Length: 164
Image 1 (cartoon, one colour):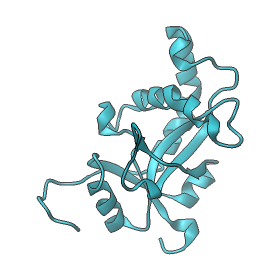
Image 2: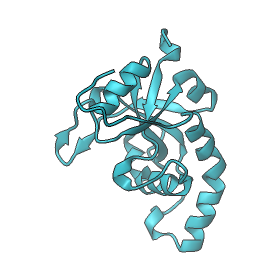
Image 3: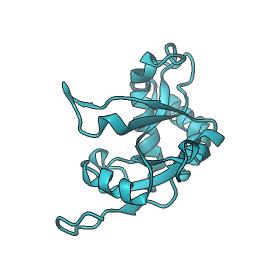
């Protein structure tokens, strides 16, 4: 992974802070749908917002482990930018805040845009249970394909103080 088209991204498709497991695509999709309006600030997505997967840009596995150790997560996956683009995804550099504070490693943060949020969709939380379920079913295959691009999830061990 040495040239720009092949830089990797360490994906946090299912951040531990939200209590999602790697196998729980439905919860990851629910989070993406709930957060979609925040992406209306990105040119081209002003009307709809976007479904995204949050990541950090890395050059290789060792760098991914170092980045993951600098976050609150311990599980991650890796995908090549070229593979995500082949799936039709855009990648957009975004800042990450915790309240008013810019988080460390924000300069490496990338959102993988899986797809626009369905046009005309009211806020996800305002939809009926049946409407939310139908929406998730319609987007499930696309969202799952992108998450699978991140390959098997890896877990950073509890090796106290050891940096790979």
